[in-house]
Length: 186
Image 1 (cartoon, one colour):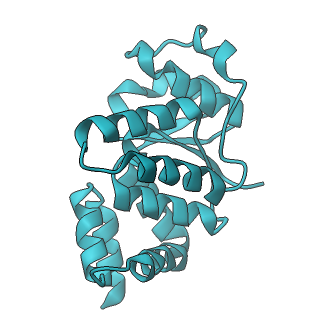
Image 2 (cartoon, helix red, strand yellow):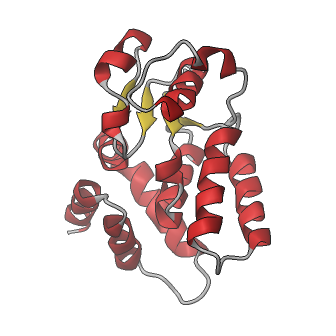
């Protein structure tokens, strides 16, 4: 059985981080999950914060995300929401989706909103994207290195190098993961 993870909106928002996480999921190394509600938050914030982005391209990105990872959308979690207790009630849908999907990890940058006392009874833990990717590197570095190479190869203009992608990932907060990948290149 695949290792199931649920991606929160804040890790799907930055383009290069989203690209890396999806490519890791496409490898079959993990089974990535999210909900339409999570994607609504991602794309609502992108439209608000980046009015320069073409709305048609954002819609296409959302469609491609859902098409790129098998069985990624979680449904039927809504009845659980009201039964859950989290510091931010607006995050209950994320935990409800993780429970419904039988996810082991919620990948989020908001650890304080997902305390262990609330997640433990459901056998779920929260991890930052940096810790999640670092764990994947420690388990099978080849998968993450290949995901970075695929990002480089997918960029059309201007040409992108591995170093540029790693720099962008580091700016997204993947400091430990990028350090581990750079040390593997030496």
